[in-house]
Length: 165
Image 1 (cartoon, one colour):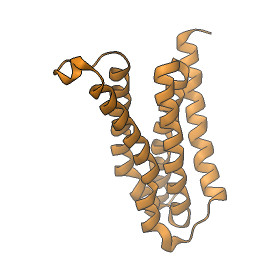
Image 2 (cartoon, one colour):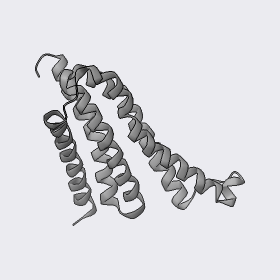
Image 3 (cartoon, helix red, strand yellow):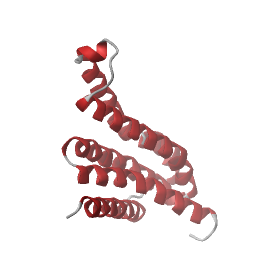
Image 4 (spheres, one colour):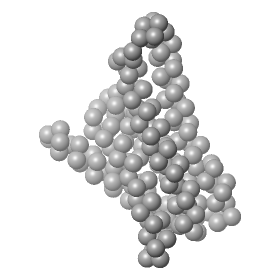
């Protein structure tokens, strides 16, 4: 299998993950609507803990690197962890801009959907991190599986807002 084909398949698998995550959340995760605000607040805890682990790992790598302590550039595994952290923060910013509004626009499904998004994001980002160190296909899947749910929930919320859903 070529690199491009493998990447396309991994990205497609990440998209499928997003569809299944949102479908499962809407179908099987039912939380009372009065829990919406606490759920919005708590849904970012698990992804935040993953980002915290990444920040800690980057900091520990820097601390253990004589050149880094002397002000040198990131290299090797430390540079990889920095890239993973940067991409994770970028995706968390997107999530923070989209998920709360989507949770409100999705009405009764909102609390369950946003709680599922938080857990799914954390799992996908851990796979992305592992894939960055171990293998490209897992990295592509982890990226897609954390990016597409945010895109799809935004589309779903906008369709609902337009009155079509």
